[in-house]
Image 1 (tube, rainbow, N blue to C red):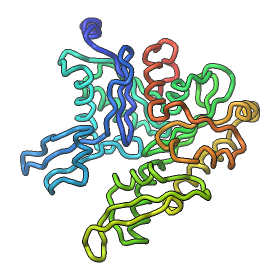
Image 2: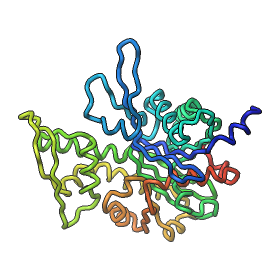
Image 3: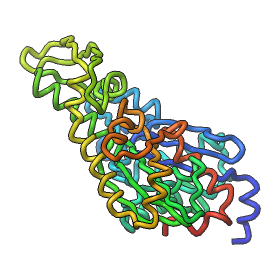
Image 4: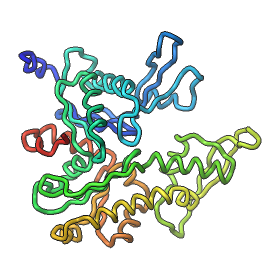
Length: 344
């Protein structure tokens, strides 16, 4: 299209980490310019359809506090699009926010996707971005983006093992020679841990809490390994027997037990991946170890547990929450070098 060069002058190309919990946007000149919850609040208007009330942080503040005609939607589930229309609305809002609501903007966009996504799910991401105003869309697998963001030597004939633990998925990838030697994705992550904490308190104490409260519990006293030191936290919820608000004190060992199934799945996924590494690359893994990224990497003692289970060095990236979007941004800034590693 002959207008593309002209439109390019007005655009600022974007790298987007379209996560289940949060969406991050990176620009070449501005770095990370947006980090907001992946949420949309809509109001039902009878036969007139729905009206969008809020997106991002404002929508999350409404979660669990709205009347019946207002719903807070999470467009992403398990790392992929669950609600196409809401995803389009959310992307359009975030892109316009980054570009200061200028209309004549059609950026090139690179979006990170889980390594286990299907062709149908990839097409949904492309179409959502194009509908939101992108003039060209590239997809990059999250472990590859994380490896680039960690400055690993992905183009060399040496193996790099990346474990990306997000809200919806956990992905393990073995990367060598700018390609993925092996990848495995399981739809277990921070969200499933939150749900397990919620169900544990409901089952053991008849206490009903919200998912936001469960997330706070996980962040403050959650851990992956049993230790002598125990921390406690006061939790507010509703007693399912009496129906009135209740205050309860729980400890970190209870939280560890509540999320043990999800932690066990993550450990098992890593072990399976290590068993699939070609013998020639196994020596590299002994030397280089495993790199952890994603919000789940911040779960206390998870690196210690993995070190005990694998007997390998475990390194948590400098800032696990932003590693993927930083890597996607670097790939966008040097498309000529990284174009071949883009997901097809």
